[in-house]
Image 1 (spheres, rainbow, N blue to C red):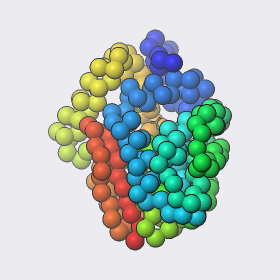
Image 2 (cartoon, rainbow, N blue to C red; image 1 turned 60 degrees about the vertical axis):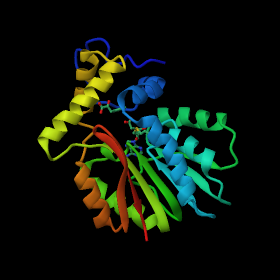
Image 3 (cartoon, protein in one colour; image 1 turned 90 degrees about the vertical axis):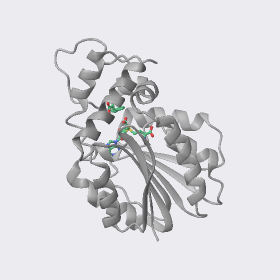
Image 4 (spheres, rainbow, N blue to C red; image 1 turned 135 degrees about the horizontal axis):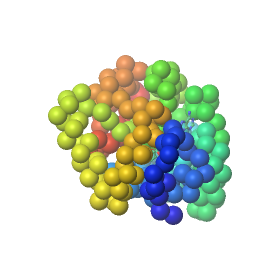
Length: 241
Ligand SMILES: Nc1ncnc2c1ncn2[C@@H]1O[C@H](C[S@+](CC[C@H]([NH3+])C(=O)[O-])CC(=O)[O-])[C@@H](O)[C@H]1O
Ligand SMILES: O=C(O)C(=O)Cc1ccccc1
């Protein structure tokens, strides 16, 4: 279904939530809003194959409808690997379970409805946060990343995709303009762009590209790099020694 949630004027633009109305249009919304999304999702599947370890867990934190989980199930083939998807939106989890069950795979996948700040991360070869950290309160991010690092096995990988702000204002303006043109080219009106920006401004707090790199190093990851960027969106890999 086409995302037209902000196509008409809202008398009051409420803070964005991943409710049932968003779930209904989510594939369209994220495809038309996040540049490079489908490339990132399919590559996450290939990265999971590169870093999979037998007898381990693979986490998809903030899984939404399970796009990254489904991509990983296509590539993961190590013995006794289980994918654990977690999301705190009941509407997302309900629909995600239907999506996962619609794809035949020998890789077990379990979808939990929970707050990722409250769950255990253990025996992990791969942890994915595909555009999720930006919705976690900033003061909770470091503790969550420390938990992810502690729960990863040696040689494990953390894959983190985010929207970025850039410290250099000239660069930030240029890449933001490219993103807005991307949305316009995908059929969003100025009204939709403006109302969506208002809806997410209190609930989606983005960090700088540099802050992500520095924090991942401070958390303890031995190898950290950006592996994909499209305008002001992109993805990092961080590998535990
Ligand atoms: N504290 C939390 N605990 C659990 N889930 C949360 C929390 N906060 C937010 N979420 C969930 O994180 C997801 C963010 S969307 C991820 C896309 C997906 N990864 C994809 O690859 O398609 C990104 C976007 O829409 O831009 C939503 O499903 C929230 O319910
Ligand atoms: O950054 C934006 O302009 C977005 O629209 C990102 C987004 C995509 C999907 C759900 C919430 C936010």
